[in-house]
Length: 162
Image (cartoon, rainbow, N blue to C red; front, side):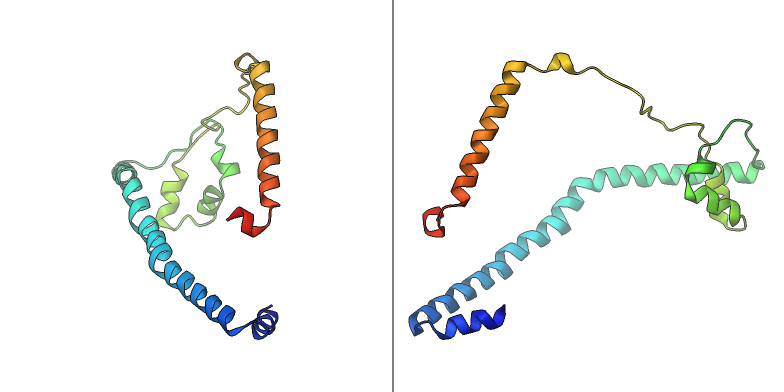
């Protein structure tokens, strides 16, 4: 592909080659100075700032869980529950903990017991009353026209789009 671009550029006038070089250098500088700076600011400052409070809460919760585990493991031995434990069959961590009982983390993993998932996935809710037939037809028609107009605009030559 680059070879064809090079062949195309060789057939152009000196003025067009110069214009292409200037536009390329302007794009490169804009990409390096503005776009990359914005990406770094968003990824390294904005996103961590937004989730910092939640991470702090999780850190304290995990510390409390580990403290409770340490207190319970030093005071009493682990007891086997009599009810069904879904974790033994569904969680890979439980299966690994049973195979590697000598690891300290295995005792903590084996303390987790659940007979079923927290949320029932069999819950069915009737949402047919929340829809308006007239509004859904109007919205469908409007979105169809909008997509047609956008598709037509994309089909225009580049000079018209700019």
